[in-house]
Image (cartoon, rainbow, N blue to C red; front, side, top):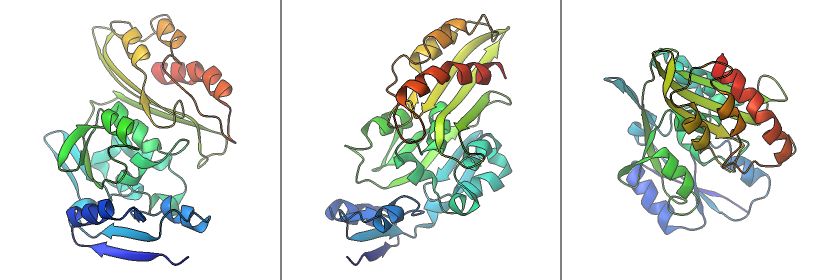
Length: 266
Protein backbone atom coordinates (compact mmCIF):
# COMPACT_ATOMS: atom_id res chain seq x y z
CA UNK A 1 0.00 0.00 0.00
CA UNK A 2 1.34 3.43 -0.99
CA UNK A 3 1.92 6.02 1.71
CA UNK A 4 1.38 9.72 1.10
CA UNK A 5 3.24 12.55 2.81
CA UNK A 6 1.60 15.85 3.77
CA UNK A 7 3.79 18.72 4.93
CA UNK A 8 2.47 21.76 6.81
CA UNK A 9 4.26 25.02 7.74
CA UNK A 10 2.96 25.16 11.32
CA UNK A 11 2.32 22.68 14.10
CA UNK A 12 -1.26 23.97 14.39
CA UNK A 13 -1.97 23.11 10.76
CA UNK A 14 -0.39 19.69 11.15
CA UNK A 15 -2.41 19.04 14.30
CA UNK A 16 -5.66 19.98 12.53
CA UNK A 17 -4.87 17.66 9.62
CA UNK A 18 -3.97 14.82 11.97
CA UNK A 19 -7.21 15.23 13.92
CA UNK A 20 -9.22 15.19 10.71
CA UNK A 21 -7.63 12.08 9.19
CA UNK A 22 -7.85 8.86 11.18
CA UNK A 23 -5.65 7.08 8.63
CA UNK A 24 -2.72 9.48 9.14
CA UNK A 25 0.22 9.30 11.51
CA UNK A 26 2.47 12.17 12.57
CA UNK A 27 6.04 11.87 11.28
CA UNK A 28 8.73 13.29 13.53
CA UNK A 29 12.05 11.47 13.43
CA UNK A 30 10.37 8.38 12.04
CA UNK A 31 12.24 5.84 14.16
CA UNK A 32 8.99 4.17 15.26
CA UNK A 33 6.32 5.04 12.71
CA UNK A 34 8.48 4.26 9.65
CA UNK A 35 9.51 0.98 11.24
CA UNK A 36 5.83 0.15 11.74
CA UNK A 37 5.15 0.82 8.06
CA UNK A 38 8.13 -1.28 6.98
CA UNK A 39 6.87 -4.14 9.15
CA UNK A 40 3.49 -4.11 7.43
CA UNK A 41 1.28 -1.93 9.61
CA UNK A 42 -1.70 -1.11 7.37
CA UNK A 43 -3.67 0.92 9.94
CA UNK A 44 -2.45 4.19 8.38
CA UNK A 45 -1.99 5.39 4.82
CA UNK A 46 -0.34 8.80 5.14
CA UNK A 47 2.30 10.70 7.07
CA UNK A 48 1.80 14.22 8.36
CA UNK A 49 4.76 16.42 9.23
CA UNK A 50 5.41 20.07 10.14
CA UNK A 51 8.32 22.32 9.20
CA UNK A 52 7.58 24.87 11.95
CA UNK A 53 10.99 26.23 13.12
CA UNK A 54 9.72 26.43 16.71
CA UNK A 55 9.58 22.63 16.82
CA UNK A 56 13.37 22.47 16.45
CA UNK A 57 14.23 25.27 18.87
CA UNK A 58 16.15 24.94 22.14
CA UNK A 59 16.07 27.73 24.70
CA UNK A 60 17.42 28.07 28.23
CA UNK A 61 16.21 31.07 30.17
CA UNK A 62 16.44 31.78 33.90
CA UNK A 63 17.13 28.21 34.79
CA UNK A 64 14.40 26.67 32.65
CA UNK A 65 14.99 24.72 29.45
CA UNK A 66 12.45 24.44 26.64
CA UNK A 67 12.95 21.88 23.88
CA UNK A 68 10.92 21.86 20.69
CA UNK A 69 9.33 18.49 20.02
CA UNK A 70 11.52 17.92 16.94
CA UNK A 71 14.80 18.37 18.83
CA UNK A 72 16.82 15.18 18.41
CA UNK A 73 18.82 13.19 20.93
CA UNK A 74 21.97 14.16 19.05
CA UNK A 75 21.29 17.86 19.53
CA UNK A 76 20.65 17.36 23.25
CA UNK A 77 24.02 15.62 23.61
CA UNK A 78 25.77 18.42 21.71
CA UNK A 79 24.26 21.24 23.78
CA UNK A 80 26.34 21.81 26.92
CA UNK A 81 23.43 23.64 28.57
CA UNK A 82 21.53 20.33 28.63
CA UNK A 83 24.24 18.32 30.33
CA UNK A 84 21.73 16.81 32.76
CA UNK A 85 19.96 15.06 29.86
CA UNK A 86 23.05 13.99 27.94
CA UNK A 87 23.32 10.54 29.53
CA UNK A 88 19.64 9.79 28.94
CA UNK A 89 19.80 11.01 25.34
CA UNK A 90 22.95 8.97 24.72
CA UNK A 91 21.17 5.82 25.91
CA UNK A 92 18.75 6.01 22.98
CA UNK A 93 20.00 3.65 20.25
CA UNK A 94 23.14 4.22 18.22
CA UNK A 95 24.38 7.38 16.47
CA UNK A 96 22.01 7.05 13.50
CA UNK A 97 18.97 6.67 15.74
CA UNK A 98 20.06 9.54 18.01
CA UNK A 99 20.27 11.83 14.99
CA UNK A 100 16.65 11.01 14.09
CA UNK A 101 14.83 10.26 17.35
CA UNK A 102 13.01 13.31 18.69
CA UNK A 103 11.96 14.52 22.11
CA UNK A 104 8.28 14.52 21.16
CA UNK A 105 8.40 11.07 19.62
CA UNK A 106 10.10 9.69 22.71
CA UNK A 107 7.07 10.64 24.80
CA UNK A 108 4.85 8.39 22.66
CA UNK A 109 7.30 5.47 22.57
CA UNK A 110 5.98 2.31 24.26
CA UNK A 111 8.14 0.39 26.73
CA UNK A 112 10.90 -0.78 26.48
CA UNK A 113 11.59 2.46 24.58
CA UNK A 114 11.16 6.04 25.79
CA UNK A 115 14.28 6.40 27.97
CA UNK A 116 14.36 10.19 27.65
CA UNK A 117 10.76 10.36 28.81
CA UNK A 118 11.80 8.71 32.08
CA UNK A 119 14.39 11.41 32.66
CA UNK A 120 11.94 14.20 31.80
CA UNK A 121 9.34 12.72 34.15
CA UNK A 122 11.81 12.80 37.05
CA UNK A 123 12.60 16.41 36.10
CA UNK A 124 8.89 17.25 36.51
CA UNK A 125 8.63 18.47 32.93
CA UNK A 126 5.64 20.15 31.32
CA UNK A 127 4.37 19.40 27.82
CA UNK A 128 2.90 22.01 25.47
CA UNK A 129 0.15 20.27 23.50
CA UNK A 130 -3.22 21.38 22.20
CA UNK A 131 -2.55 24.99 23.13
CA UNK A 132 -1.99 24.18 26.81
CA UNK A 133 0.93 23.36 29.08
CA UNK A 134 0.29 20.24 31.14
CA UNK A 135 2.42 18.12 33.51
CA UNK A 136 4.22 15.32 31.72
CA UNK A 137 2.88 12.82 34.26
CA UNK A 138 -0.68 13.65 33.22
CA UNK A 139 0.23 13.60 29.52
CA UNK A 140 1.72 10.12 29.81
CA UNK A 141 -1.35 8.78 31.60
CA UNK A 142 -3.66 10.16 28.91
CA UNK A 143 -1.46 9.92 25.82
CA UNK A 144 -3.39 6.99 24.30
CA UNK A 145 -6.75 8.66 24.85
CA UNK A 146 -6.95 12.44 25.13
CA UNK A 147 -3.63 13.08 23.34
CA UNK A 148 -3.42 10.11 20.96
CA UNK A 149 -3.87 12.30 17.89
CA UNK A 150 -2.22 15.47 19.15
CA UNK A 151 1.00 17.18 18.09
CA UNK A 152 3.38 17.95 20.94
CA UNK A 153 4.98 21.37 20.47
CA UNK A 154 7.56 21.53 23.23
CA UNK A 155 8.74 20.16 26.55
CA UNK A 156 10.05 22.39 29.35
CA UNK A 157 11.65 21.74 32.74
CA UNK A 158 13.66 23.47 35.43
CA UNK A 159 17.35 22.65 35.22
CA UNK A 160 18.31 20.67 38.34
CA UNK A 161 20.99 21.70 40.80
CA UNK A 162 24.44 20.24 40.26
CA UNK A 163 24.59 16.54 41.22
CA UNK A 164 20.85 16.44 41.99
CA UNK A 165 19.89 14.49 38.86
CA UNK A 166 20.73 10.79 38.41
CA UNK A 167 19.98 8.39 35.57
CA UNK A 168 20.62 4.73 34.89
CA UNK A 169 19.60 2.44 32.06
CA UNK A 170 20.04 -1.28 32.56
CA UNK A 171 20.29 -3.24 29.30
CA UNK A 172 21.64 -6.59 28.19
CA UNK A 173 23.54 -5.24 25.18
CA UNK A 174 25.91 -2.33 25.72
CA UNK A 175 25.83 0.48 24.84
CA UNK A 176 22.64 0.55 22.75
CA UNK A 177 20.39 -2.27 23.88
CA UNK A 178 16.78 -1.68 24.81
CA UNK A 179 15.98 -1.29 28.47
CA UNK A 180 15.54 -3.93 31.10
CA UNK A 181 14.90 -1.08 33.52
CA UNK A 182 15.43 2.67 33.35
CA UNK A 183 15.49 4.81 36.49
CA UNK A 184 15.84 8.57 36.84
CA UNK A 185 15.91 10.56 40.07
CA UNK A 186 16.13 14.14 41.25
CA UNK A 187 17.25 14.29 44.88
CA UNK A 188 17.29 17.51 46.86
CA UNK A 189 19.21 17.34 50.14
CA UNK A 190 19.77 19.62 53.10
CA UNK A 191 21.34 19.03 56.48
CA UNK A 192 22.30 15.47 55.59
CA UNK A 193 18.73 14.44 54.70
CA UNK A 194 16.68 14.16 51.52
CA UNK A 195 14.19 17.02 51.48
CA UNK A 196 12.55 16.19 48.16
CA UNK A 197 12.76 13.21 45.80
CA UNK A 198 11.33 12.64 42.35
CA UNK A 199 11.83 9.12 41.04
CA UNK A 200 10.71 7.80 37.64
CA UNK A 201 10.83 4.30 36.14
CA UNK A 202 10.86 2.94 32.62
CA UNK A 203 9.70 -0.61 31.78
CA UNK A 204 7.95 -0.91 35.15
CA UNK A 205 4.71 -0.15 33.27
CA UNK A 206 3.84 0.29 29.60
CA UNK A 207 5.04 3.91 29.84
CA UNK A 208 7.22 5.95 32.24
CA UNK A 209 5.74 6.24 35.74
CA UNK A 210 6.56 8.01 38.99
CA UNK A 211 7.59 5.90 41.98
CA UNK A 212 5.39 7.66 44.54
CA UNK A 213 5.94 5.13 47.33
CA UNK A 214 9.71 5.45 46.98
CA UNK A 215 9.53 9.24 46.99
CA UNK A 216 7.52 9.23 50.21
CA UNK A 217 9.84 6.72 51.88
CA UNK A 218 12.92 8.83 51.10
CA UNK A 219 11.57 12.09 52.50
CA UNK A 220 13.59 13.23 55.51
CA UNK A 221 15.96 10.26 55.36
CA UNK A 222 19.74 10.37 55.02
CA UNK A 223 21.11 9.05 51.76
CA UNK A 224 22.75 6.05 53.37
CA UNK A 225 22.22 2.31 53.11
CA UNK A 226 20.02 2.39 56.22
CA UNK A 227 18.29 5.60 55.19
CA UNK A 228 17.10 4.17 51.85
CA UNK A 229 16.19 0.71 53.20
CA UNK A 230 12.46 1.42 53.46
CA UNK A 231 12.43 2.94 49.97
CA UNK A 232 13.95 -0.21 48.50
CA UNK A 233 11.35 -2.35 50.26
CA UNK A 234 8.55 -0.48 48.46
CA UNK A 235 10.45 -0.06 45.18
CA UNK A 236 7.94 -2.05 43.13
CA UNK A 237 4.79 -0.68 44.77
CA UNK A 238 2.38 0.69 42.17
CA UNK A 239 4.25 -0.84 39.22
CA UNK A 240 3.04 -3.16 36.47
CA UNK A 241 6.25 -4.23 34.71
CA UNK A 242 6.22 -5.42 31.12
CA UNK A 243 7.28 -8.86 29.90
CA UNK A 244 9.10 -8.96 26.59
CA UNK A 245 11.93 -10.76 24.83
CA UNK A 246 14.45 -8.89 26.99
CA UNK A 247 13.12 -9.73 30.46
CA UNK A 248 10.06 -10.96 32.30
CA UNK A 249 7.96 -8.86 34.63
CA UNK A 250 9.16 -11.07 37.50
CA UNK A 251 12.82 -10.43 36.66
CA UNK A 252 12.31 -6.68 36.41
CA UNK A 253 10.62 -6.66 39.82
CA UNK A 254 13.49 -8.63 41.37
CA UNK A 255 16.33 -6.47 40.06
CA UNK A 256 14.61 -3.11 40.51
CA UNK A 257 15.64 -2.60 44.18
CA UNK A 258 19.25 -3.51 43.35
CA UNK A 259 19.61 -0.88 40.66
CA UNK A 260 17.55 1.70 42.54
CA UNK A 261 19.86 1.30 45.54
CA UNK A 262 22.95 1.74 43.38
CA UNK A 263 21.49 4.87 41.80
CA UNK A 264 20.53 6.44 45.13
CA UNK A 265 23.89 5.76 46.78
CA UNK A 266 26.12 6.60 43.81
